[in-house]
Figure 1 (cartoon, helix red, strand yellow):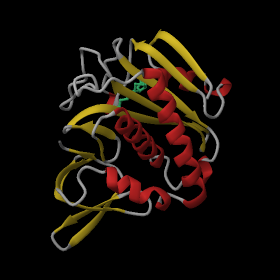
Figure 2 (tube, protein in one colour):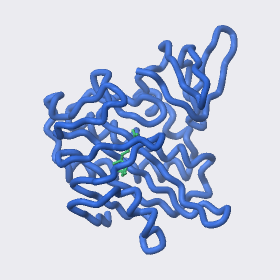
Figure 3 (cartoon, rainbow, N blue to C red):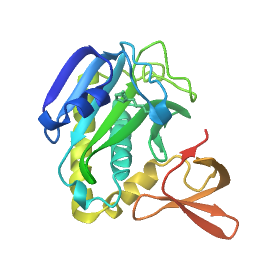
Length: 234
Ligand code: BTN
């Protein structure tokens, strides 16, 4: 694992995007603090000391993916497994938050880099609340420390990357189907009523299934709706 560490930079995702040509597949960029951490939907991601902030650069095997979004799900699974090993009762909120006791302790922002129309790289950025005071408050949030989980940032990072790489190999060989049962087991809302925001639309239903491509199957009465992109309410 090739890790490049900084004390403070604006954003590990932004660093990767700016230096993408000189970075290689599998490089991991970490920062103890970010001065302009970014979250999904152009939100700010508060990144004071005490959290784990990193980005993983992926350049190989991308053409084998049906959707680059699957990489976010793969990362959520990798974080979930590592956090469980550290002692947290972690679950995934489809597609890309990781929660414990119903509160978010990890957010993931994947960004694609194109060269013309070709997908050149995907940057998978991860923010994990370990023990910092100021949390991102778009959703109910928690730190691992508040849950009584003592996680060493370096150990956690290594486990997450190992988990990710293991699952990425499976994904490239057999598609999302190879990870589907693990993902479903870790998915907090399976079989439960959910409220989803899909672009401007808000829909309600039951989270019926995760399909062989990692998409959410939402039941609305007799209708099954296949959802690629969306956000779930807590
Ligand atoms: C979310 O909105 O839930 C996603 C948050 C992702 C934050 C991480 S921290 C490391 C990487 N660098 C960034 O600027 N953002 C991601």
